[in-house]
Length: 93
Image (cartoon, rainbow, N blue to C red; front, top):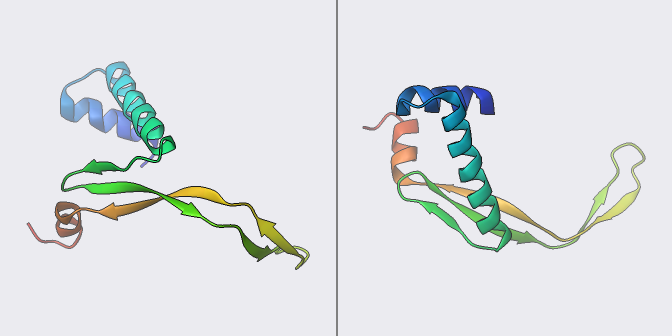
């Protein structure tokens, strides 16, 4: 599912126009991005948790040349699924 499909589904289920659903989704993404940039977790009870996770610098290889390259430290995101999401995915209701 891509963003346009998600907007269409959100609009249909919430009884909104697509423009309004797009604004809601954009606002949600802005809020999550802002909170994650501030190193805050985003917890959606039952669905899951987005956790900022620092990665240290590490040695890797250029796949084309085989030459070793240092990858700079950065922050990535870990998603920990919630109980209800896992149950729904595994057929338990």
